[in-house]
Image: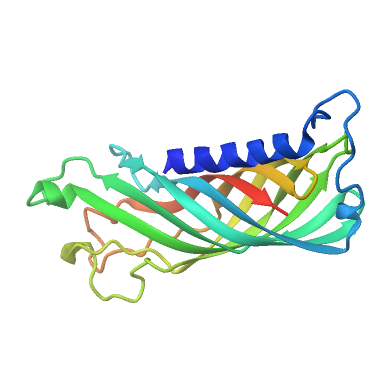
Length: 238
């Protein structure tokens, strides 16, 4: 997966380099590309990227931590951008995110087999972030920015409606969660489009765990809260 996005990143940079030819985006006196593009009231784009999701787990009593093994997932989505004023834009970036986390529980006498100590949490998210983008002054064909806002996430793999729980090998979380997001990026203006790599942190606000029916469950009984955390790296094109 990392190789795929490395190739996408390389293609984006190569396209920019080709379109600039001898002038160069970072040259001393570059030709200013798409000079009036961001003066538009509304414009659109799309993004591809990858993610790394984790869980922040708080416990009711002192215990050995649950080990969360993370893996790299992918993102794809669209962008709608509304210009509020010269340096502030409102962005809506709905997308599809796929990720996987493995939870390794510490040894417990209630576990009958090694498989009881492992829970694989596969997640397919439909993500709805509403963000404010704060841009700096444009320098040639480069414009850094910061962004932040709130998001809602629908987990299509939550198992929230199932009656079965961990005693039947079903790890359950809530279907909907809310988050806040903070990040930064850079707009790079080529002759024909804007290439915008960015990195963003996603921080779950509320507890998303659905507890087992047995309040003394070895999987959920001692968990006070479970919240998603993520790092997103997106490559956007406008």
